[in-house]
Image 1: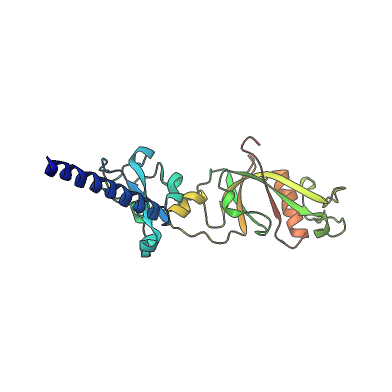
Image 2: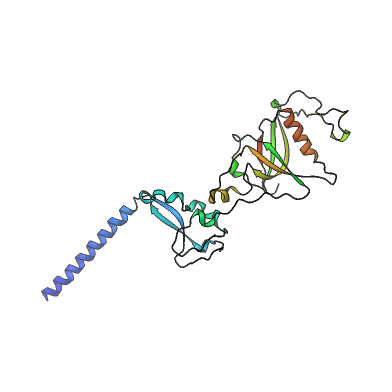
Length: 249
């Protein structure tokens, strides 16, 4: 009987020791900073061309000291929303990490309607955040009154039809607002900033915004574009401020 009691006591002490050891390891684990990447769920084997859904993905934590150069290839969970709906270019087995090359696609192409043209506007990147402006957004341009010279005709009446003769406005307010216009490109970026970040495609020339201009049946530009062009000519094409409109504008 004493042997049985001793056996039970040894088992009990072992369980207590295991419990303390588990608590110690848990406390240490809480002190380790983790870096989270996007992985494929263990129960999902995804074929080539599959469009990713939230149900396909899982966040995978890696201790920061062991990340190494993994950050150069695997996608962090900060790109989670960007990869949803993206098609993978190769089959991915369950339990694998999602790499940038798995969803890398060529950037979207700029497409214009037959009656559309593109006009590039120099903008002041110190006064707005380029990554928050995407193609399809509506923007207006703000030109300070102090940038304009005294009121003067911008066209020669002998050279231009009466419909295009105009005078640079001298507003009572301090800022002249022209727009809104539909954004077609932000520098070289013709897609959303999130997609370009996820696919590791760098954007350039973000100090120039391309806007869509719809020509009328005679191939003429709208009056707002004439006004904008006159103001830009008057300021020597100095960068202008950007005002982003809400989606309903």
